[in-house]
Image (cartoon, rainbow, N blue to C red; front, top):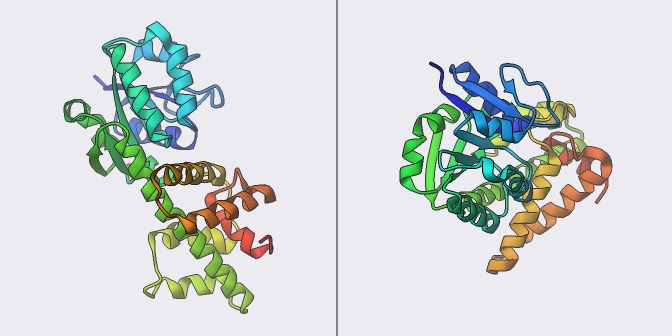
Length: 284
């Protein structure tokens, strides 16, 4: 008998994770008002119907505020048989509060923040940062193992959200540097695609270059693997935590400005590789 899991939020990431599980023989139920049909998933009309069918529920939502709203709406449908595994990149303090609230209802809560694009997630090649107690993680290990090739338990609830922001800070700055570099190459008269091929043979190569270089060189931002506006949300969270802790993030301060300019140019819903257009279009 196939193992069963539910996913609330089957957009880019949630849909990719669902496809990944379906390929491995899992029975996957989904709910998302913006995506009434997803290939391979049994779609539910509302979140309450979904949690009535599934004890393990992935949350793949835009913000921690949205997650809290979904849990509020579920109300008494949440029971001590449920475990909510949250992939949302949200505000860590809000994730901790959500964990405490679910515990009062007898339910379990784990963070499973995804490092990697929806394309990597679809093929089980992303990385998970896990936040929660060891016993709950071990109980759901088969599901977590099916979701991602690499899994790291970084601490209690809240720790995974914090570490995901560390990851996104570094990755995002890599993309911004790549965009600036390729636009600089073009300004000097080089073809971006040819420059990219050469750079991949040098110490300047990076995972960001491998994933986003071709999109930047060709100006190909649709369909997105990860939306630029979502990374802008993450950068705002990074700066908020930096202000609370006294951490110095001058490069991220500039990065936020670049992302805001890219959004103003109309690239908010495009792939985050579109940050290069801020440099190309002289919008600084």
